[in-house]
Length: 93
Image (cartoon, rainbow, N blue to C red; front, side, top):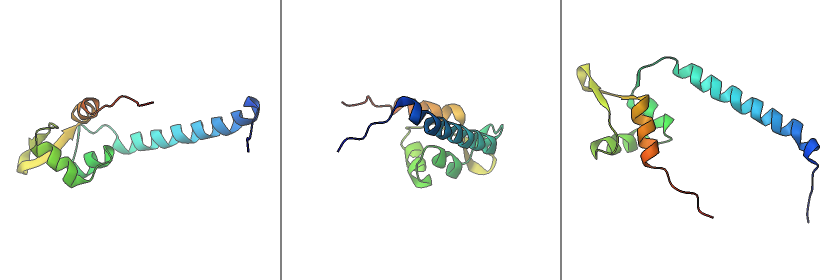
């Protein structure tokens, strides 16, 4: 069974999905605000990890973090982006 659609028929659906996705992303960005650094649970969520997984990566030296007053751990956005960049993989076809 093969289903075909004209490009113009799909355009409104695609535009609606894009609008909804962009609105969702902007909402997420607004929640983060102008924070300089993120605690471990928040940083882990941003990376789609569990907090213990991010802690383990930090303890293994695979991601950098800052230790602030009271030995609290914080991750700056650049730490998270660098971690993601180091773990990129090529698409397989």
